[in-house]
Image (cartoon, rainbow, N blue to C red; front, side, top):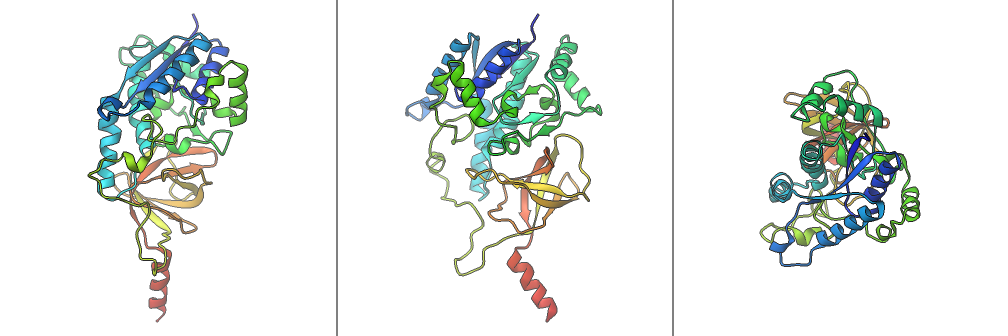
Length: 355
């Protein structure tokens, strides 16, 4: 019997081609569309319905069964409510990191492996892992009699054969930054079919497979899973207007810190040595992917990490995630809790000491 893979289908070109590639590999594929926002309460048109229709069409073209699941409460409690709370505190969180951690790779994965009895979950993210399809599917097959689908994942996570999260082949589309908080347990049951392709290749595959309806859909630029809308207008009216970045009068030098502290540093794969040089990326909303900057780490108590970059960084604010890389591997990330002295402050201190 063919192995069963559940593919999260959003109606976009990336997830549609992910489902296509899985079917071409001979797997039994089930499409899964997630509803995580109730637009009826807002009294507005529903972008989720448009996405749902596109997902239905994708599965019709590929002749795949489609399931739809409601995770509205999960999204509200684990993503949107914390998002509002952090904005009220003057922080600049990234909802996509939280959505991937709590909804897609906890709740969604559990639903796929549990009620749907899948061997693995696949998504349209641009990322790769060190695991092969065979190793992922054999692992699930061996654990098929376990009532709790995550029981053996926890056990396997303690083995030396840790699954590593790797950058996508297409550097302009790499999404490992947004996956930097998912667990090792989840990673061991997850496939990223389009991670080894460039975006033009994905679009070409979609066109040749009759998935033209996905080619003209805009790529998601809204809050994860909610849809395409103006982010600022979407925040509740009770929130005070906030701007990204640290606020300073125009007459003062811009703060460019060399260092920062993160809390709850989550390591996905192999633990890193604090003395080795790593790459640091940040997770501000709406900014283009940038190459990781060299940095070093100092491990602190309570899973905190002090990070020092070789060059001062712009637009760093508490609430963002500091994401760490070692070559092609995404090691994990931590939530920025405080910033070190700015470049201007450091120079002022040096001048004072010289006097």
